Amino acid sequence: MELFRATGLECHYGAREIFSGVDVVLNEGERIALVGPNGAGKSSLLRQLADVDQIHGGTIVRAKETRFGYLAQGVADETRATLDELVATALGKVPDADWAYSNKRLRAMLDGFGFTSDDFGRPLREFSGGQRSKAALAHLLIDDPEYLILDEPTNHLDIETVRWLESYIAADKRAYVIVSHDRYFLDRVGTRVWEMDRGTLFAYAPARPAYHKYVEQREVRIAAEREAYELYVAEREKRKASIAGLRTTLTSSNYSRVKSREKQLERVEREMAAPPPAPEVRAIGVKLKSSRRATTGFAFEVKDIAKAYAKPLFSGVTFNLQQGARLAIVGPNGAGKSTLLRILAEEMLPDAGEVRYNPAARFAYFTQNAHEQLDVEATAVDAVTSGTTASEEEARNLLGRMRISGEAADKPVKAFSGGERRRIMLARLMARKCDVLLLDEPTNDLDIASREALEDVLVAYEGALVIVSHDRYLLDALSDLVLWIDDGAWGIVEGGYGGYEDAQHKRERGAVAAAAGSKLVRDTRLTPLKVKSKLQTIVKRIERDIEKIDARKAEIEALFASVELYADREKVKALEAERADLAKRGAEQLDAWETAQAELESIEV
Image (cartoon, rainbow, N blue to C red; front, side):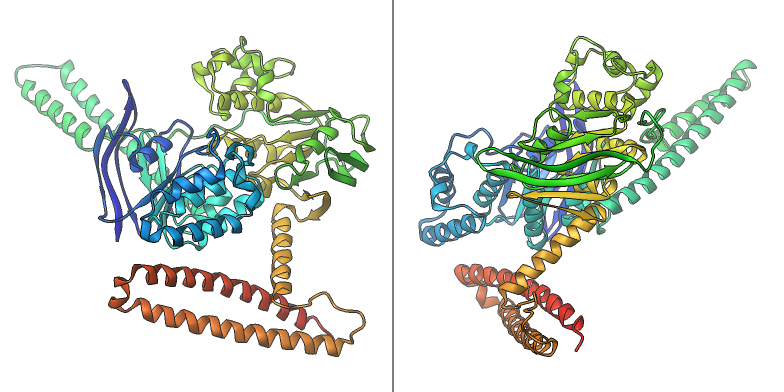
């Protein structure tokens, strides 16, 4: 079933055209990832689809009796409303007959999201970005929309909150249109991709993982575009040359031939005309270099460092980083990631312990607000070369890689937006020669193309790298070690970000299994035979629970096949909620079974 069909949509601001001729269809169950560079018109398109902005041309036909929910960027960031007032606003849209049920459901949802009764009187602005996102989403979902339109829902969320959000969306059967620069998120939740590129929207075939497959399909599309354009140019130039040759010997006898060829050329230009293909990304003229060749020696050592404010952030942190190694620091917002990075950059003293650098090593530190240090009167080129040994040509190459090219590179820094200034600062960082790079959220405010450009440069960097970021795609590409911090605890996981994710999933499966009654940490007082017997009992019990869940799911599916059911809206809602709960419980029990079964197979009697 089509939820909406947009045809010939246009958007322009004054004389500037943002996009035109946009034709899209959203079907039930689809989860669309809308991608494109900053300024391409993604948010403008979402506002038109959400009926927030008036369309400048074209039509949108929505399915009858369908509701949608729209989550704008920073929807709860500036509001002075309390959580209680947000709940009251949401319930104010609910019919009186459904009010009690909806109130109970909304408060249960907020409780599941981690809000307590003490939180309801607090203004939303006091909550973390993750909490505001959850509150806004709960407010959105209470109306039971058939599809949702989300603009940058992952902005400023920590990794754990993003993981929660992607799990929620991936399990939801409703349709979504989502704008996000989080490639990892798009891979996990998306089923198709729409791309805004130079004022045109390209819809890609359904494929999973969505972003990864989109990149492959986009390369095929651009190659086809380039071939079509080259054929068109060759044919056009051939006909122009023929006409020019006839003109040089123009007589009354060949005048008609010239006119005929000119009409043919007009037809070729009209019928074969192909738009110029997307420009090829230029190879990096210079790469990020260390001041000396990478060695196997240490870059720096950390011994027993600790830091606390109102409560301890971390203590006893000890590790050493070899030259050329890549370390990612992860953890929830407020855990102390940026604080640890500032200590490593010698901008803050630890409460205890020490950091010792290799005396021959030079380091550079990129803060979250590093772009504010730029001289706003200097040109972008001068800002990059200032304090570095980079030539003007190298600076222009680096800026071009950061999507600031041509005449734009000669504009003063004050003419650029905050995100563009961040790109200029990153280009400046690339131009420096250092042995250790300390990066704090370098991809904030960057679009996907800029993130990929930065990623390419950092992958080729030979020095040691320490990075704090919520961009899991970047962390997966760069890191070989992960230092996690959470509620005063810390640890180091090998195998890069992928290894950290695997460890997280194992911990979660273990927690689920423990909740199901599985004692997977062996009691040393029990013999291997008794441990095996207990695990066999647990496996059998979990299998019985899974059979019961599957049986009830089959009963519900049979009820949904009955036409009479849909006369009772409340019963439909209750069955849908039960079906979703059964799906969640089934997945949890399957994880518990796999964990217990693996433990059972490892027992040697």
